[in-house]
Figure 1 (cartoon, rainbow, N blue to C red):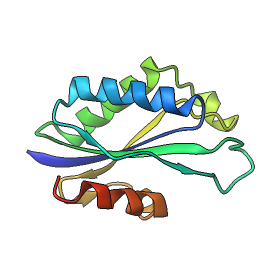
Figure 2 (cartoon, rainbow, N blue to C red):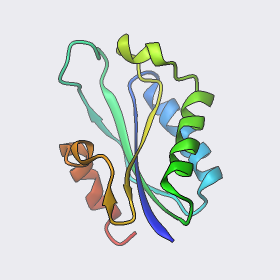
Figure 3 (cartoon, rainbow, N blue to C red):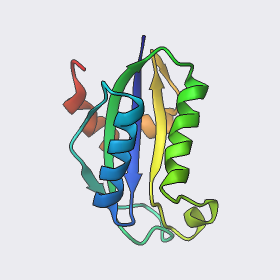
Figure 4 (cartoon, helix red, strand yellow):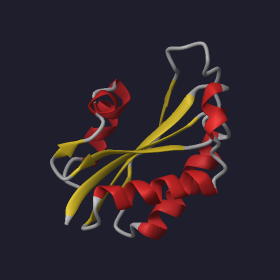
Length: 124
């Protein structure tokens, strides 16, 4: 079993969308544990609304590609559209940050909010 770390973010109806994504993730990954949320602002003019961000950890023996496929399926089911990003709207964004010992998105992993939320997952 591999330890999996994912990040969730939303800036449109963020509390409701994060809560919905949490429920959907728990359906696929029953041992998932979530951090509390943290509110951040984007560093660009495109994203006008603050983001709610959450980390989650779970264990799986599925390949990384299969996990990413499920994450994208959840995003699609929640109504995420490719054009939304250009408009600064993020209904939900779920990214696979870590698969086992491999950091798959180093820039995201080093973000201040990710590092702050990681402390809530120590020992998971």
